Length: 288
Image (cartoon, rainbow, N blue to C red; front, side, top):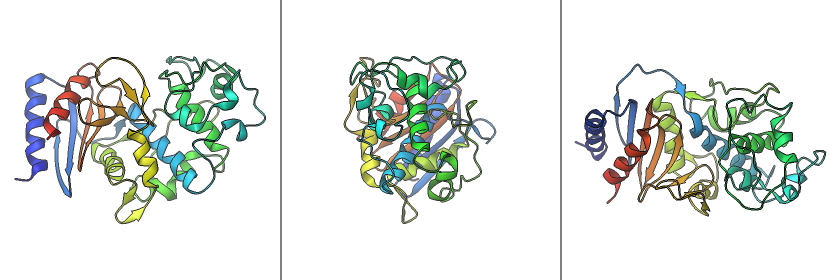
């Protein structure tokens, strides 16, 4: 039995004993894979795991010299009226939720204003202060779209999506036709695990470089202080530090990519309130 199979069996047993509402499990350790399903293998919303795809999009554009993570976004949207201090905001700060712009998440945020990105950037910045909001990722992608020819999915299709076999995916759109950014992608468990593999392998896929390793490293380094709850204390470019020795991409209702060394555990689920405990158990299982 491989290490991946052993981990899979431990996690399957724990999900059953704890009542965690898992739908699919994919364990990658080195080159070994083990999987398990509780429900039909269909594409389902990955929620905030999509924020990792946004980081990859920005990273690919940075590799091509189209943007810089650390240039003021005012350089890319010179015609927008910016709030006080927003002229110093960068893509890095937008993607790490540390713009200091106050616009909390709501279910109707995509339709509450004529243009969410314009509204977001018109508000003042309090400095490098953390606030988790899909408006921040949405705005980052709206800015990026001005640099890559207008549509993020079209830009990503030959550079990321097609190599991963995901070129047929749809990304939810706002009324302006832009991708919503921080959510809105539906994937099967194994398809989400492909994102995990390319992240684990620091931007490589089947021997081909898709994005620079520095972009991947920034997903779990240069942490921003986010809060005090375990597993939510520090945030980077789409990545949460913890729990324990792991780091993760974490979408609502238990969509998880959990990284520890050469191991990646991918979980799809419908259990919002059980996800933190499941993440902690995965971390305990993976830790040396």
